[in-house]
Each structure stands twice: as structure tokens, then as C-alpha cells.
Length: 189
Image (cartoon, rainbow, N blue to C red; front, side, top):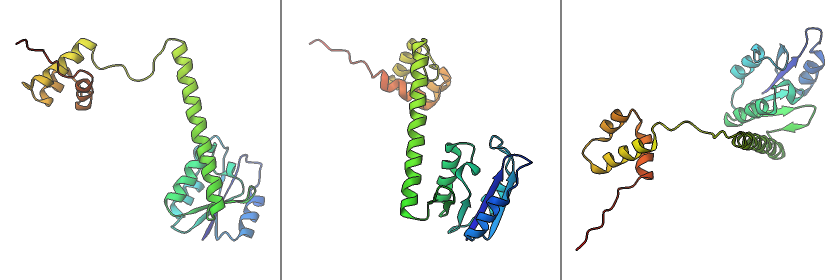
């Protein structure tokens, strides 16, 4: 079944152009929102999600009607694909129910993923250039980390007791244990 979604940004805009195109495409139901692209409140789009079933195709006039950003549109595309549904846009001629349409969509998804990764790397590099390091602060100073690992290797206390003593979680203790292996003291004969 083809389900249509239309959105107009301003109160003085009219959705009839989108609705007519969706109807002409064969959409059985059409949901319409009157909201700007920047708002996350889209009651009709929420109804679309509730109405779609496996095998259905969501049809939109243009992709920018579906989401505020490429990331939002890709999230919708992935959601639809994971639930056995398709996405068809009328203006840009994309239909994820076809092999070519899925290929184009995945190219968009990969492109967005790469953009996000590049922006993240650039942000981290800029932070490092200003002397800031990423990640969470260490739970314990180095001496206490070594002491926690030593207690683990001595096997006198349980993992739970060591974690409670230092106020750390098990994965944190195990990371210290990997970093500070037991010391082997050579014996002289």
C-alpha cells in the first residue's frame, strides 16, 4: 500500500500540490503536517509511523518534507528498510523498493556517515590543538589503578570487594588489570 506524507512550512502555504501528486501516484492515505522543518512536533508524521505495515511504501513529494536534515531522512529510510517498508520520493525519483533506489539510498547513508565522522575528527583535532583531550576522566589516579590491579592479582579479595573498595565498576577494574599485569619477581638460585 502507498502511504503519502505532505508537509508545508508556513500557515500561508497550501499542501494541495503535494497532496495531488501523492494521490496521482496512487497513495491510499495521505497525512499532512503544517509545521516548519525545524520543529520536531509532527503529529501527522507520527500517525504515518503508526499506520505503516510491512510491504507498505511511504511516498513523499521531496525528501526535505520528511526530515530536518539528511540525518533525519536517513533515519527514516533505515527504519523503513528494517521494518520491510519502502520509501519513494516523487521529485528526485528515488524508490527504495527497487535495487537502484536502495543503492542510491545507501550511498546517501554512507555519505552522511562519513560527513559525521569527518566533523567529529575535525572537532577532536581542534580540541587537542587547544590542549583538551577527549574521553571521560579516569576514575582513579595511576597509583590507585596499579594498587587495584595488584589486589586483583594477589587474589586475596574478590572482584566485587576490590570494586567496592575503590568505587569502580568491574569493566574498569578489568581494564586496569590488563594495563598492569602481575609483576614477576626473578628468583636467584
